[in-house]
Length: 429
Ligand SMILES: Cc1cc2nc3c(=O)[nH]c(=O)nc-3n(C[C@H](O)[C@H](O)[C@H](O)COP(=O)(O)OP(=O)(O)OC[C@H]3O[C@@H](n4cnc5c(N)ncnc54)[C@H](O)[C@@H]3O)c2cc1C
Image 1 (cartoon, rainbow, N blue to C red):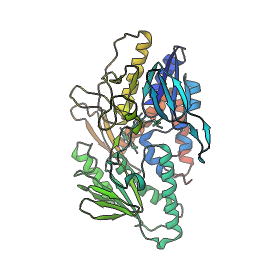
Image 2 (tube, helix red, strand yellow):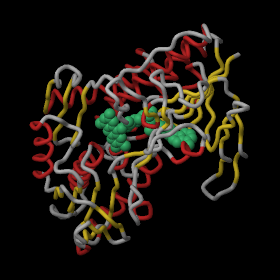
Image 3 (cartoon, helix red, strand yellow):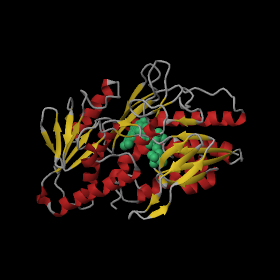
Image 4 (cartoon, rainbow, N blue to C red):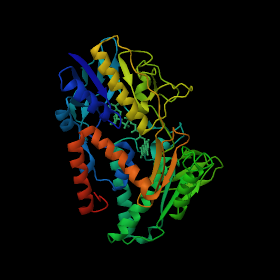
């Protein structure tokens, strides 16, 4: 039987597995294996909510092994460290526990078709001190570690109010940075409600942006102006046209050699392909993303497909696909279609991927949401407030419905809705 190995069960990977698991795996047409570093899936656009405790992983995490058992594929936990292309095998690192004790040795998995969807990592642009001193939101584990640090810091302030301000610097005023700044205020408000005695002006957030405005990806002035206004109303200090040149344990230096003292630093200034991609002897671009043909096949090896943040797919206007949730979803589903075609006829003509910009949203926690819908239609329609929040929330609902199917998906969403009303607003451990 044909072996299909998918590495990366993220925003795109889970939707791909939902499709090929049902059409190929359950029908015995292919032997499908998912490989992921993590044991469970959380939709990455919600990682900042996980990092502050607004999102409860107990309610939202999808256990890969349980999902696999019901959806026509197998799951193998591990980190991809190499691909032996001549023997069509992938190599997984040995698995160790928290104390470094080996649980499983290095492993090999055979493939006939390999699909790489391992997402992106934060780009530190080689700036000294960023890797050592900043927090990143690339993996679920990083978000969980960040949550503990944030909550510990608030607890210290609640118990010892003379400790001064909690200075947070966030670099990058895109969706991750702006949403994170708003979430931090949500945490402070909620903890005050839980009896934490924290000063109203405890939080001092600097939001640093190299370009001349927040949300550079939003084209409409009314939208980025609304984000700017909301952040300023929360007291966020927005510093545009500011370039960071060095980070130390105490803060960061700008190009003009100003020092920004910080207790916590979050780096959200753009992404690049994970380092492993540059070691696989496959064509990558300067951002370390795998270059694929329009049909999502690697330009180096037609047995390898890639989608989402880790892939660069050429578009008719000469651009490459942007690293966004909707790109990952659309490309992953197209890879699914192409695999189904190839299994019917190995010489089948494959479909090409055409990026369709459906829009973008910024959800500033409970405070405000803005977005643009159907951007591919003459610039699209700007929406704000409750309608924007409804559409934003629908994107996650659609993801849940796609990966679980309509019945289980609706039941899970209903259960989640009830639980989120009964449980505390913040997860404090
Ligand atoms: C806080 C935040 C907010 C965001 N908000 C938005 C938004 O509003 N709109 C939007 O369009 N996009 C948003 N994004 C970007 C969006 O999340 C990504 O574009 C999308 O998740 C990419 O999907 P993917 O399937 O390519 O990769 P991912 O969803 O990142 O999945 C990659 C998977 O690969 C696994 N993996 C990584 N390395 C390895 C390895 N070596 N071996 C095995 N497994 C591996 C990971 O564990 C993960 O499960 C946001 C991102 C963040 C962090």
